Image 1 (cartoon, each protein chain N blue to C red):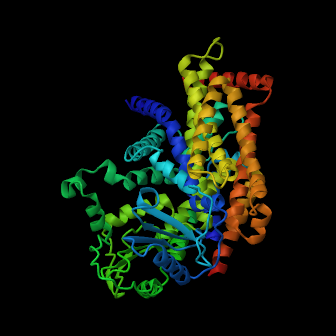
Image 2 (cartoon, chains in turn cyan, yellow; image 1 turned 90 degrees about the vertical axis):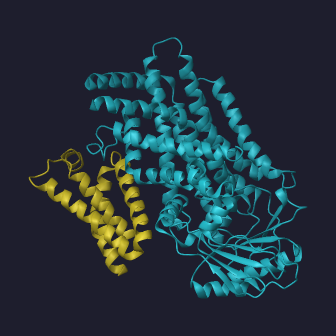
Length: 525
Length: 108
């Protein structure tokens, strides 16, 4: 009975892992990149430079700019520069301008003047892709949340399937073919398990209002915004009174926030009805200030008189639990070293999925090693494995290359960067179909290695922010990007060299591997 | 936090050596009577102490998160580097066991 249960779990692990593994690999890889969202954006928009500016000065500049550009707008948004974001971001509603009636602009933190940076989505593209999968709302979110559920299922069934969890806790035996792959898969899965469990469970918490909306709909019907206002505070601003009243200086309101919560870093600032007697200003505390993602930590002022009207209520236990999971997932609170660990654990999750996919195929290909042709379904899995892994890496690399090579004046430039990503992914598919499995792997990995290794050179040639300059300037997010690309390229080159080894050596290897696996199955019997 | 990470790293190394199989491959001899037991107790104790220190110095929220992160990173490094650089890692564990507490003490 017990063996029957374990076998059933192994079956579930194997097949859900295969069906959702390709998509999960992409979700994990882009999610991992999102931990460096701001740093990637900084690399992709090098025109925005970093200055040590006080929040008050930045806020004053933002108010000056918005008063000049959008005095009649119904609402303004301001985001102050911080350790990771260099510029002051402002936005305002304008029925006649910008996509969807919303205009955004970045201001220089020192001069307060608008910066013309190249049009690019930056790290935001990976972040959005990670949970929206380039699909219309809400389907992408549904699918990615379902994938998270499958990941959680994969972890639990994987633990049940793994027979010698504690006996082999510290075991990794390299250079032994399938045995090594399984060791690696198990070890990364088990050793980083707290992260894997947290990340997949918290995804479900993040989108619980989408995937389990029954309770919400029973109380609020379709008016979900009322639900969020009740939850997070800072509800709807009153209608404009159409009585002109100058907006209180925002730096003064900022000082009030500092008096209420000394040392608080401010994330977003929203101004409703600026210049009206019914103006409202809401400051939201930066997500970097707490481990829990406390969206209710905010202060609302009367924009005309400067009086504090409302501040975030203390959270209930249930809310704080949900906020903690959200905060742990996004890691906004993490400083540099913890952020790097987050990045490494994200790569570990990606590697668990990748090794699983490779093993599924390897095991079955071995059975057909002597057959003249591989069965069609195995060939399909092989192509999808190649496209979803090395193809995706090529797509990521071309996204960065497009950022440096597309002309700055190009119409819809940011969209073309995204197009470059998907076109490359499509070409990788065609290439994987045209070539044999081993060749396709090797060639795509080698090309990826080249693309990533040359990124620092490309950066140095096309901008004034190459490694030499960035290191001297102490611009570590710029230099870190280049160095990470270099490291990634070296890793891919190592993988490619394994795949492109002369056929004789690999044949010998697969023979010894076959005999060893035969030995193991005999043992298992 | 680095000192705390070193203590946790040494703790996991001790737990690994507490398994006779790993003790033999790493140190080239069979463990003496009672040695695995001693290593196991020491290892768990170091993990507990590092956890307590993390919570004490960084508070519950950051302490728990950072401790979990450094523990996972340390043990992953240990397991994947072990087949390639066994001597270096055992040496690192020994150094960590000494340096970790010193760093924590000097940080006050």
